[in-house]
Image (cartoon, rainbow over all chains, first blue to last red):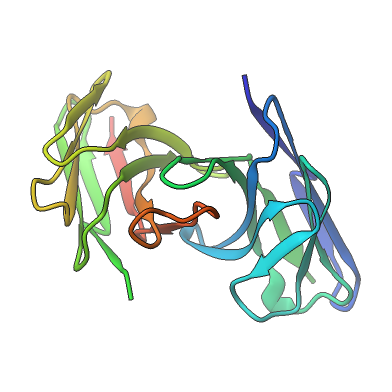
Length: 112
Length: 115
């Protein structure tokens, strides 16, 4: 069966520091991968999606970037974090077309 | 553009009561998905609906794909404390979802259950 792993579960970072959040999927090949941000426990904002290695689409211009160095690995990064980057970050995988997406357990990011 | 309007925004109910929530759109959807998010965790898929008029159950949960294709309903019978969480509806962005499979989500219904 397919599983998705995100780490770390929680992260506290100072303003201006770099960020790297990792997501890996097992049990499937060539999945679509997604990064979402959720503020205040409500509303999912799609940040990035990827349909294949090295293919990244950005939905919202921001201080973040994403990369997909391997088929089942999706990384969310920032060179310099802002206070507004705080939130709950979720990774998801899904198939094409009308297939549901399945989410990881998320990373709670707090910026001080 | 496509939007999903989910209501109610929040519900406070007594344990044992039934719950109803719905999701509406101004455009047609080919798929309706219902997710539940427990506090501090990622959303978990509850029910997927693929056909207009379809009624699908998952334990005490029942979801329906509206006949107009512009709405969907989720009912929870005999609520228990572990039903607490946020329930999201979702559907594919664009008519067929596209190869990227992007979804549009409702803003969620927050359910609180009093023991």
